[in-house]
Length: 352
Ligand code: B12
Image (cartoon, rainbow, N blue to C red; front, side):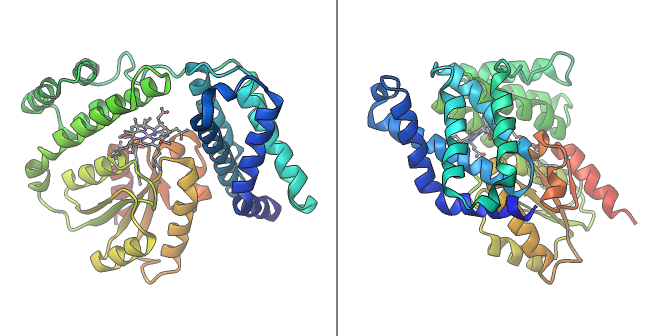
């Protein structure tokens, strides 16, 4: 156990030089493949190598090979979509293992093979193309499909009208969030991953949805208060804020006083806010696997603060939805898969 964590720390300290070493070897071993991508291609390869290492670092730290294998599975879809050579990802995974083995102290290496082998096994299976998030039979499917189509046509007006009409026709706001906005955002991400949507289109979809969400605030804040208080935040450097915003809004709809801090919030500032607002619940959202360390550190700091026995810590977001026991590994008090189940869980846990 300790060896795994020490190896994680060792890789983190050396990740810059390891990533350069990995890319240098890959270019040398696949002559004629990479040069055509030029200097920007080299920078992208370097960034990819750093991402591989950062997911391995988290997997080792939390002793969860699934953190690495989920990432590898996701990346293999991208590599196929942008038509990189079939064996490119396998080779860089092998090289990652080799570079670490050649450099790290032998007594730290006992667990490395297990992680690299799990990643290679994942790559030997056929690439798993993710299926649509607008699943047949799901609640409010027609509205979600219409909303996605409006966004894909760059039609903010139509998207806005569809949602405003749905709300006027009695679709509860929490369902608009969880059954329309959420699957549509995830579908937008899937289409981007499959190289069918540009970064600009993704930004447009997210920005449109955020502006529509803002219109419902008079209604949201008008709900009678139940005396309960929560703070909702992303960890430091995490930019995915829409999920945790939805969590905060659904708590607010259920009568909680909510303090939504948004993306990329520094740890010290979160700790101060918890105390100032005397929060009963802290909701922490993490999307990128390499930010899990920030979540772990934040939780550990809350546990050693004066708020330790007063605040319940819930976690959620992309990696927690993929790896079932991850919330326990970061030492949270609970996890929920979506905003509606999050408020249900908090209310149940705090019930007298
Ligand atoms: C929009 C978006 C962005 C925007 C975010 C804008 C914003 N203002 O939030 C921007 C452009 C910043 C972005 C950047 C990146 N992104 Co992005 N992004 C997305 C996208 C398309 C949608 C995110 C979203 O809104 N989801 C909808 C919300 C509602 O879902 P959710 O977050 O899961 O939240 C729900 C639950 O999980 C739960 N929940 C969430 N938090 C919490 C907390 C608690 C306590 C509880 C109980 C529950 C809970 O409740 C929520 C509501 O029901 C996703 C696709 C996806 N599958 O999510 C990709 C995605 C997450 N991004 C991805 C990537 C790769 C990136 C970048 C690395 C891209 C790049 N090369 O730069 C960067 C990294 C940035 C960073 N350092 O954080 C990948 C991640 C893959 C992986 N293996 O990790 C995804 C999955 C896209 C994909 N399919 O490939 N991204």
